[in-house]
Image (tube, rainbow, N blue to C red; front, top):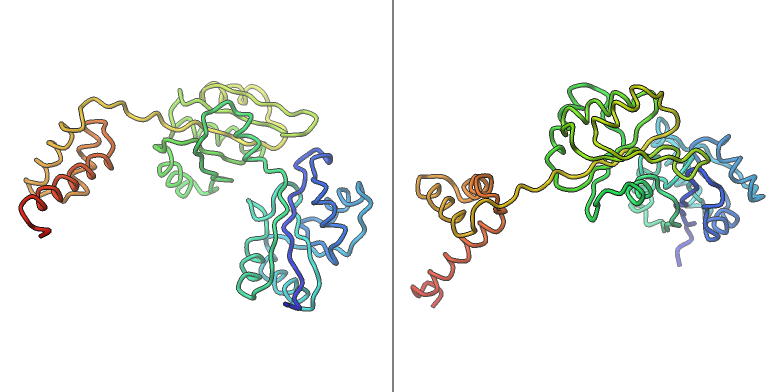
Length: 289
């Protein structure tokens, strides 16, 4: 049996203290130490449930340095719970480096699920999100931000962003520019808190609203995916286009991509049809005998 202690990743409330799970409270009570972002914020949460444990400061600028010290305590057999100021550690909050280090050293890591603002926003957004990606905070630099938005503007599934109040108006303006004025979105404010609010509409409408109403609180933005282009040609017609391109010297992959753009048929369907037919023809010719 390992003599190492165990690291517990514990989700904390994002606004309502009642949202912490019984297992989360139990884990914090049993820990030898609790690592946290801001000891002042965590003291309020722990005090609410009468939990008194030694606190270890663990925040992003010092994450690497602090991870070494925490790993040493774990190696001494101490059990440590890691929490963030709100929500799940490691999700736009410190924790990844410590978990990675523990994994490399063979130290057990468990997760105690809790609230997450991104998932909560998706649930209440009213936007179809069977698939979605979490982008967190966009890059601050204009070039990096433009490159990131250019990469994701054409995705067919929803995209989730975090944003601070003083940057919300600019971010909504940028999203409107790259995603289009009519793209639907939801802006969720102060989730689980007293003044929780979700506004839904087009990016243009939401941008105009917050230009006229000062943003207050912490925000999550959920933007719907780009509508898939309807099929304008049949699969057989799309395959004919791809074959013609290939015969004219185009490689199969880019040929299928161009055929997909022209026809509205997915690239995968076109490629599969071509490859499947070629294999069938080869078999009939005796190539597989």
